[in-house]
Length: 205
Image (tube, rainbow, N blue to C red; front, side, top):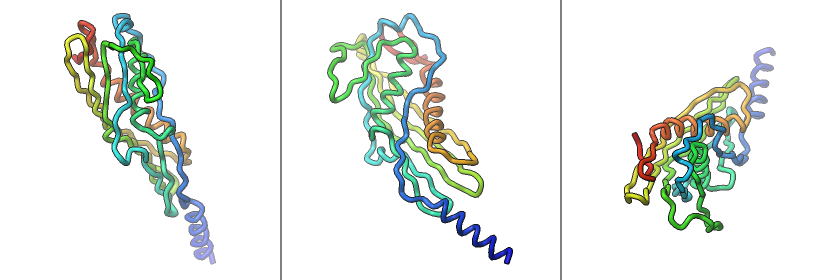
């Protein structure tokens, strides 16, 4: 009897942990920065355009449930390219740049910015795999960023790339959202640490 009861309990546990195909939008955003504002950047005008994205980019990833089935993660607002572009813009603002984000429904941006930033989201993923008594979380990002300088007509290419893992006992959607945002912050901080301005152009060290 104990063996039968245990087996029945496992079946109930797995049934309760099965995925139903629920779609959960995650808010991808810049986390607060503690970096100090560079006074030399404050008169530099930067326009960030929405980043391009792959055909499957609207689906961030899935949570694979212990009892089978999936929960789907998407980007709140539906466009990872817009979300990542906003994160990059907010990080540039925190450095002291004057930043505008160009959107299809907004035209109030400088006609002649000093710097124009474009990009391509090649990967932005969030995965969660449930196991007995834990859920493994994985987040990955790969973005190509192109900086066009008006002063000398030069271009700079920056590669935002990284990953982060974690494991939790009780899974909550906010945990995978925090993992993605933390990963973006850590890797953007590393990338932008090498940025400098010379003759109103953004360059890397």
